[in-house]
Amino acid sequence: MTTPSQTVGPFFAHALPYAGDWELVPGGHPGAVTIVGRVLDGAGEPVPDALLELWLGETGGRSALARRGSGASGFGRCGTAPDGSFRFRTARPAGPYLALLVFARGLLKPVFTRVYLKDVPDPLLDSLEPARRATLVAEPEGPDAYRFDVRLQGERETVFLAL
Amino acid sequence: MTHPPYVYEAYRSTVLRAPSRAPLELKADPDAIETTSPVFGHDELGPLDSDLTRRHPGEPIGERIIVTGRILDSAGRPVRGTLVEVWQANAAGRYAHERDQHPAPLDPNFTGAGRCLTGEDGRYRFVTIKPGAYPWRNHPNAWRPAHIHFSVFGTAFTQRLVTQMYFPGDPLFAFDPILQSVPGGARDRLVSRFDLETTEPEWALGYRFDIVLGHTPMEDA
Image 1: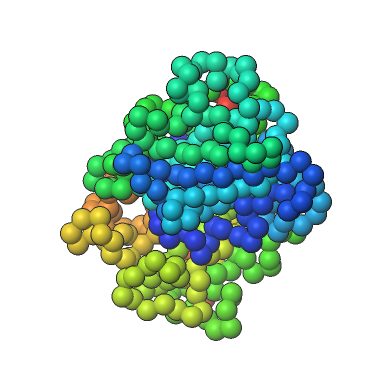
Image 2: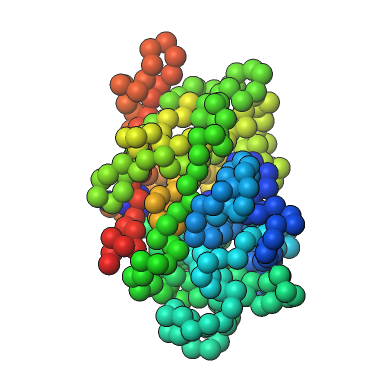
């Protein structure tokens, strides 16, 4: 029987974040993009104690925890700020999307979604009505910058995937 | 299903944070990046990362314990070389976290965070201090049973698991909505067991806690 999930709770900031955790690639890396956004609850209020994890799809040459080596790391982590904001600097994925997990106090299990950097024909996107589809597509804010908000609940709730 | 639901009203913080729509089932796709997981290397971890009692000049206060177990996949096979992270309160029930305002003492010799990679048999092992129970403001006179937080990776990103390990026989179990949110038959999966074989004479009590990860998307296909 699978071990049940439990909430990450409010007190992980002394344990899970690490130096450079949000930087899958170093500053100035060719082709780097930034993804910024906020995590919001069902009342539209920021979630200041969430932890996000981004997965690019391959481990890469740069180590994930120590941030040593060259190239890109495949994994990043970012705790939200008091205004619910987070940021990642990453290489572009080989495909159209990156995988994103969000943990927080009040989430007894994480929510799991995808960040599409472009709106392209795709089995998952094509299965969604336009308003729902839009929740998975990051909004460009310049040539190498994107915005992606995570709405945990409510009218514009992000599409979440089964774990 | 052994996981708790997103909404469990007795745990008040779930009410505004739980998604209201059921999560979408992904169609099986061998090229989906969620079928893979990051790989972490031994050279990224420090030699003392798995001993939470040796991260400071002095020894922490409290009951020294050994916590060990295996990370297994849904077929019972060991998950090798995977990252296990733990964090916890100190023996007095206080986290080394700036927002924990519980009026219990901090321990200058205890931070309460550790990590390791599993061995060939899927085994992890931590040396730490038994954490204390602590109050929270979920409801009047609310106390969390003593627990250690675990974060585990598998071989697929969808297997990612964060959970809590409890200690056997804790009288607070029945009053804790976080543990009670788990369906009845699965709650005991979160309770470690005392193990005399893990216990080291004249030194530390031993507890065993195995973790079974969910199916990978490809196993479901």
